[in-house]
Image (cartoon, rainbow, N blue to C red):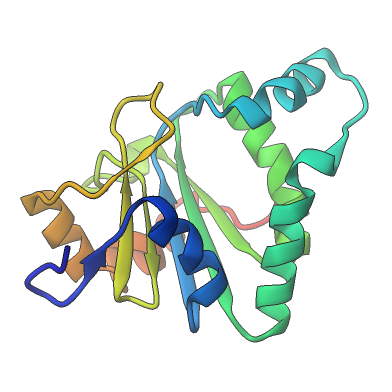
Length: 175
């Protein structure tokens, strides 16, 4: 689906393919306090129990991001977090150091300082193709539903979505 500003919403295999085919930028906004991804269940349990980490489950992601960054591409992510941090948010922040080591720019913003941020997750690739996440905290699939807030958000992709969020008071880039 192409929106009136030329941005195309994608889903399914087209979304997955974007990680291999984007030309210069992949930007992510995360707004949920918790995700229910089955691949994270055991690593989260180990983290909470203070057990040694096994990073094998995320190795493909860090390898692929590292290669993309080495090729001159940019990965940026902003996490809007509630304070005090939940166990899951602490887990995510701990993982961030591995992603940052591969070249991903990850920042966290206190939810209280992120007024006007959309209430849904998204990825935007090359300021031209976008994936919008579900609003339900239990769903892990993607949605390509068109809405006024999506159109408004995507028209600001180089503004509020990542760049301005990265500079809000309290935004952190190192953990």
